[in-house]
Length: 230
View 1 (cartoon, rainbow, N blue to C red):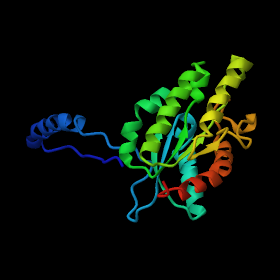
View 2 (tube, rainbow, N blue to C red):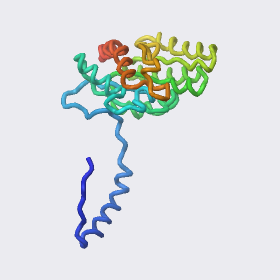
View 3 (cartoon, rainbow, N blue to C red):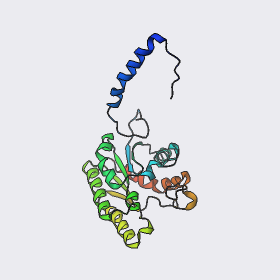
């Protein structure tokens, strides 16, 4: 919340200015904290990491209508409250998600949703690289006994049927890994309809996100049931 300051007495202005200047290096040097959507609750709740891109970061939407907020509310309504660890960055690729995975794991998640790959497809990156990066992400999560829900993505059709098939095979293959819960298409359930998209015709609007959440909710509840069983 912004604070309103009145004019300082003349004798105090230089002293306040010096204090402000001295404080700047301290603020800049403050260590970054693991990302989190909401304050940690007083009663420990399962910590659910969402490692994703703009689709789960809520690009173009108010924070209260974004995927993570809607999922958190839906889980609370279903009597499966969680504390969401926000690891979604708009524009991120699978390589970017892998590069920052150690940092977001500092939030000590109990389970994870991995929603990455859409930007790999939009950029036409080799499916073999997408598979390599996602495999490394799943390996790191498995090493920490963190159950995973892998959300698949389809490649844009303008890249041709051969690329589209190869891209889909990557997710289908990884989705068969032991211990991985798999949703073949994150946007499934009708969220790709024009009437449910933002003007860019890529990102779902708030109604589209609601459909995504309703579609994936049973799998997330299944995921939470895996906590502590690995």
